[in-house]
Image (cartoon, rainbow, N blue to C red; front, side):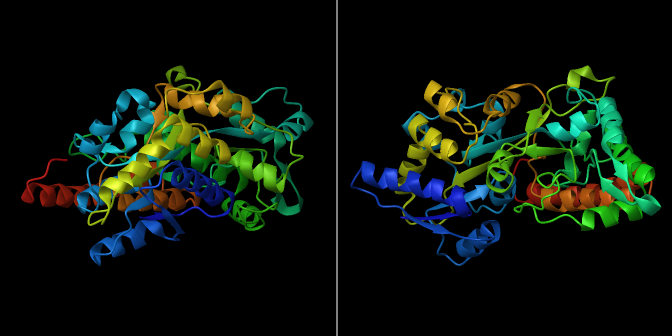
Length: 405
């Protein structure tokens, strides 16, 4: 049975150990694991060509597009036969794989986000605890940030563009929404405008040129020159995986993690987190779907899931967690990352097939705002018009095919 997965390095080795454990646990099915780059596109090409793998490890946001393209098999009957259901999963992670009343994907490893901070840099600025509100974050950032000659930024307390992976979702932190759940895009929701106004405030405070020059000195994410690991930026939004990179590239870093700050006038948004996950799917046309699900079932077991997540130093998407898992996790903040997704403020992009286009438009809006070429309202009004038009066409195509959203 062929299994395509995207992971390399220690994450890929972790899944290889799970595959080996499955292969040794029985003598009916043998899983051949193959690492594939650009898996979200190559899997679609393989399906179109009639030669897909039996299992593919995709990203959570791929699910809606694959469902719209009829590219993956529903897992309802397999899950029912195996006794797999929503009650066994943290709801935020179960929802990512379900769409329009069907189960399309099951989690492999989950993710949640939190504010990571450099304890030594905060102490050097006279800050005794990490910020709890956006206003405290802004004030602490101003204390930490240092300038050189001609306004050159030497170190920064916080800048929203680092690492810049959640530009399309900052509005959630301010109570914004991106979709009404039916037929209307809500790009210019007041919460989203407030988020971009906050992002733009950094450009107004430091200058677009100064920020651009500062960021050009950052190394790649997976390197000791990473802005956070290298001590260029004191605080940033990052995911559960960040401790792995700290361990690899900056093991002496004195760091901590707390829930990302919330606006002081919105305490109801405390403990917000972006959730995402890697998922396992059975591509349409897979030659061994029953064998494929037998392997997926093994990964979804507490034994298989905890083996994978422990080796990748992430938390588990399952409700039930063993004491062994918590005790042996090498992530010092595993309890935080495991608890945030169980709260009410968990955010995941809209499950609509045009999300890649929508996300790109929002990223472009953030660029226009940070370069001070447009006001937040102008930028988001433009996204609202363009993406609503695309969304209307998307809905019409679905109606013509007799499909519900």
